[in-house]
Length: 88
Image (cartoon, rainbow, N blue to C red; front, top):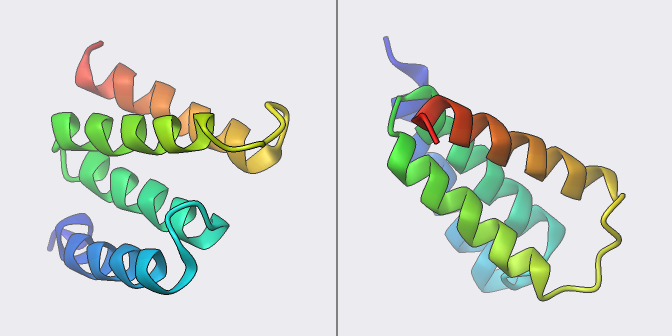
C-alpha cells in the first residue's frame, strides 16, 4: 500500500484549510506545504515535489525570517533532497 499517495489528498486539504484560516505565510500553512512536498517526493512525483518546495521557498523569501531559523533550515534541506531525488 502506498501511504504517500494516500496522504496527498489529506495534506492538500490541510494546506488549503490553513491557507484560508491562517493565511499563506503562517508557520502551519508553510509546514503543511513542506509535508505535502515530501509526500509527493516519497510518491516519486519529483517535478511536483520540486514545484511545491520552490513555491514555499519563494513565499518565505518575501517574509522577515532569519536564515538560521530552524524551520527555514529544514525547508532548505527538504528542497535539496527534492532536487537530488529529481536528478537536478
